[in-house]
Length: 266
Image (cartoon, rainbow, N blue to C red):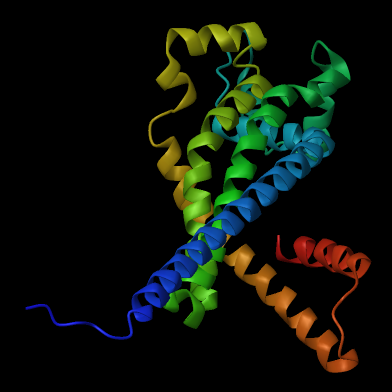
């Protein structure tokens, strides 16, 4: 015999509750994904602008590093002992910023040497930075809003999201860094030479041994500290504003504070 079940509306309520939870979860996933995409696009465009403006300084820095890590072989058969000693002493001296700039200017091409590798830098930096901040924003929002651990440990969530974002970005960052530095130091005479080297030995040319690992170990701690400082300063500014005036920052004030805090934490 069947036992009639009363209050059959409870099943409908439970089903409706399940639908609401599913809709809420889907909406949260969509929101986190959209935040990640917006952050990735904005940061990629900003990275392209910054890299273009700072390319001359980056070229000087690369030349200085290259000069310190390479040794020049000089034939001293026609030189006396004093001249050879002077030459060796000059070679051991680090290249100053102004000396590096003069070296670039005196190379064939003149001032255009300051922008050697700019195309690789801009094209390569956009996906790396976009992935970094996009994945960071997505992971942070998912941890904060969908996990109890993330809600209870916001600072640890920021650190974990920063580490994940930077690790993902390192895989796209290494190839363009390698190509850019080889173009700046003259290892590749032109874009064509770089492309031929990549086609002949793609893995060796784009992913030197230990490149991704070294990049990750070097950059992850920096990313974690930078974003922890950035988010903490943002929270402090907002809290101080609410205490003093009881109202949030305006759009113009947020942009100004973002500029100041970003420069300070970076």
